[in-house]
Amino acid sequence: MSIDITRISDIAAQAGEMIKARREQLTSREVFHKSSETDIVTVADRESETFLREHLKAAFPDIAFYGEEGSYGDLNSYERVFIVDPIDGTTSYLHGYPFYCISIGLRENGVTTGAVVYLPYLKDIYTAIRGEGAKKNGKPIHVSAVPDFVNAIGATGFGCVRSHVKPDNVDLSAKMIRKLQGFRRSGSAAIDLCHVADGCVDLYWEFYIKPWDYEAGRLIVQEAGGKVTGFDGNPIDEKAGRVFASNGLLHNDMLREFAEYLGGK
Ligand code: IPD
Image 1: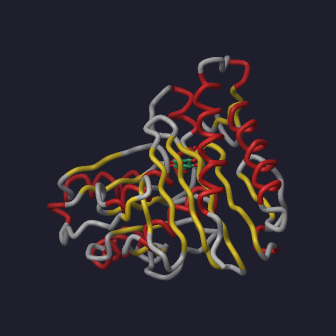
Image 2: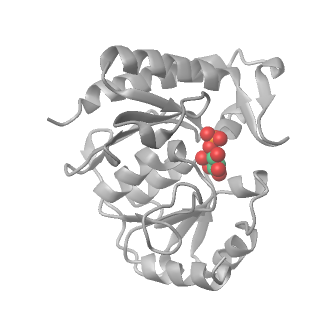
């Protein structure tokens, strides 16, 4: 029996509206640093996580919860688990830049089976159920048919710089800016993935992101006909966190760019 995606969507939308309203009252004392000066979390991230944990637990008592802002042990020890980013794009959220979202992926026995991404500012909701396609606001979506870089829009993120991970994304992005028709930066991995899924972006990559950033978006891209792998073309390695999504047609060309840039690193 497939998961009740409408119920998960309702919970995501409620949390989204809550954080949108909360932002108006947020004070500087409610913003904290995590791993570095530029890595932040707000009280709203924590409130959103608590809300989502409680409401998902009440609606789906048999499914565990694993969120960005708490301590939930080993992700791979759970049979059925919601993997949740209570605000993906926290920096944007803090500044009032409208691209932030709630991201909820459902993983069952190691396989992602359901996904919801809600963008409170735009009131867009992306959903996917494994084997049943992906939707935006209830309508089926599909990746683009753009076959080459010169006609493509690329998106990426720079969380790796914030985390001081080497090699980072800066020089590769500079190179790709010269090859692509356009380049966009939303500040939310989950939104970038949804944009690949609905075809307004043709490829997206990022060096160091976590399951809560990509779990839902990955399924949404796959169910929209796109491809999501690591930088070597294999399934994503959770530890490395290198995530590459495309419309499929651009996949091999970009894998060659990664190979050249990384040279085995
Ligand atoms: C971040 C966003 C951003 C990416 C970072 C992530 P957060 O998530 O997805 O696009 O570049 O690596 O950490 O911290 O806003 O939930």
